[in-house]
Length: 106
Image (cartoon, rainbow, N blue to C red; front, side, top):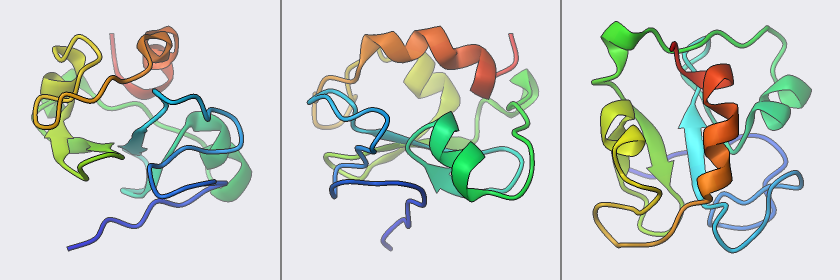
């Protein structure tokens, strides 16, 4: 099954117009709508509702997509990945940690 990533994507690795470095290869399934977007800005521009964060009790949910190998991982797996895909070993942007509060409950 292919996961559809919405927003201002610029390539098949889930990079978007806002974040498009070689390491910007994840998409996040948003708690509020269950749709994948590359970033919060894409969600703000394309969804017609506000963002809601994933509650800690739901961190077992598969909500992160590696844009390289297309593996869906749980929020726990992603948060504990040290910015490296556990399947294909691709590097994720470690700067994404600065935005965790927009996606995940503290």
